[in-house]
Image 1 (cartoon, rainbow, N blue to C red):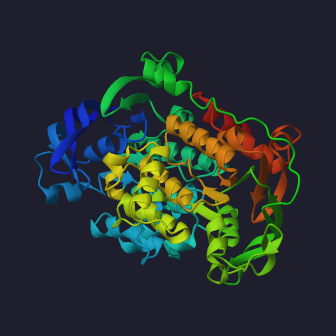
Image 2: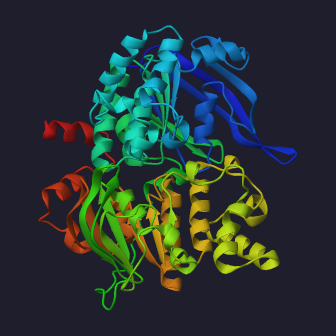
Length: 535
């Protein structure tokens, strides 16, 4: 049961800078959170979810300011507290799990050193105690080799593993309040189950209050006691989780419940020559192979979804196809012609033919370049556009990804929401006019309404331009919506592959069955029931 009030926010207003003006991001929001209670925050990309979560720590990002309202944390006025007092709270009594772990870790330091920094620096634990606690939490987070993984650098673990390491780091000082900002976005469905269960157990064990920010309604149903819906920085409605799932009151909330209706028309069986063929490829890093004898084809105008657990080798396949990681064995061919294994040996036209949209938009976009420069560079490099034609193409691409050109063309990535950054990544890939686009978790950072819009956009572009897609994803709803063919991977090997209908219809391979049974449902008891069934 929830205890005394820990966090109280009244009339909160947060503004963002737009040139010489300040425009509202959060508009008169009230929020109350009790000890041990979990509040779910849901809304579209840009609704103000992350801004509200950060404001609960008395913090505003660069280009933002808290302009009004009260923020009381356990009797401490965070709006009037000194920066030193707030720093002493953050990390120890209030923790934050960021949406993009890859952008939040220092690449020059090992995971264990970054974990220990706050508990040791604040005097809460000795170094030995902190390391022992880290291993315990790594184990609870289902990280491989929990005794050793902390001694790796961030680039030596997968995105999903890094996100779990960040969640463990937030728990280091047993804080009173944790803000989870999309903590399972980068996780496959099987890993997500374990992480959600671990987060829920730890929150209960430590009687920690939490704000759980997400765009995944099925996930928040498993985690939150109450749900608050935001739109354009305003509260739409708030209610007990079960009551809201059963009977949402606002029309906007009802529209959230009804999304993901899109499913592309079924394509006829492929014929003719494959656009890209992967034949007997083995590849890895150092002396360790990640991929083992992989073979599959990508046919023109079709979408192949590559699914599997975090660390199964999905993104490594993309690196091999694009020439970023030369294979040890096997080859990649474009229309029957073997491609040089190293991208530096490929022609400019070969490079143009295959573009990639990366999983972590935060780290994929140069923070010092405007959208004009980010989207314009591929169009300049591959198509030779400049001057007015280049500007027109940039504006056209911004319109395609539903960002108003006049408002966004001169913005920096730091002035965008996570979903907006991902859309810029899509526009940048389209700018080269490729034939194959590799989409590495392109919808994972987007709310469900925007996800559907992006899938519809990609489908239309595919039909209009004859594009071929390779979709790397852990979201089986996305696979059902957009894929023609499916490749299921585990431990760097293909478990099964074939047309979507064949893969999703029983009987399934055991691992495919595990994936399908791990997709969260809009039932608050779903996670508990599943864990009970699995023992």
